[in-house]
Image 1 (cartoon, helix red, strand yellow):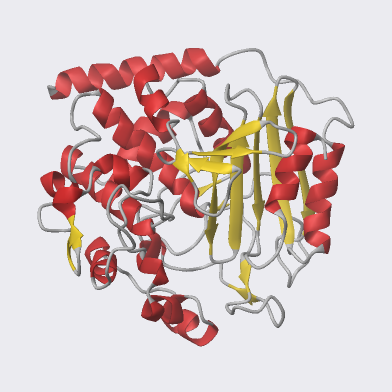
Image 2: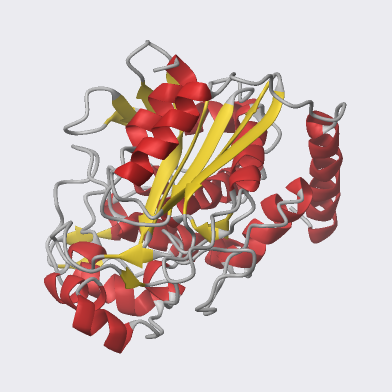
Length: 380
């Protein structure tokens, strides 16, 4: 496909997005329409989360609430406009770009990893010739998750080492080498195993296929067309853009003891799999646009929503960077969650994208995210 044709397709996509997302100004939700959600958010703070921000987008308009504090030291409240690290929700953005590239004929999900990244996946039983791009996206590759490496954990998730290494800059090759020093979890295609290494590799494939960084492709294809002004791929930036709250962690397996401010860190330790920053409104806008077909053609959206069972969770299935969860009331919601130091985030929506919820806890050791989802979509 020529560069000129690609430019025309991108321009057409931007127009389609404007049409799909245009409409009358969103009216305020009637008072009391989200009482259960507000109570669940407040309960999370009582359970120990420093602060919560949550926003809903539905047929009635938009609604937001906050509880707790965004800064323990000053007592400053959280804001519905807070920007925060979204962790693994990054994967949904990366998967969307890879599926767009497939739609453009620039790659196939049935291509092997070896085709795009020769020699990258090898050693200790790993073999990129036997793993497809699809298996990266739905976590059926069996590739070892580098964040489960004991040295990585002790370096970046334990108090003393975290403060010594929080600004380390790690390359994708560094992180991949960690994964390749371990044996695979299982044979490709035989099981499900969540692995950040899969999306590290997916981001590397985007760069190989386009000649641009995955961050640049996400900005060009998703952030700019959707006008996601609070969303960014930070690269090596260690601070959060304003407005934002502080992020807190115990930096230990225990949920007791002191809480530490972990707001500043090098996002390079989660490149492609968990490094992005966003806010409630942008996450709702992104997921709604995705599910309503504004970002992918029907065939690619169908592929994205073709799921495999999630081991250990009978109410959840995983597609291509997109999860499907069945709530207690029988409602299916699509979306993703994301955790990184001091930040737990969820974005979910009904299958048609018309009712969405995004929320963030600025503490990573407590809080019932499922209760917030149940409250919004089931009224419990």
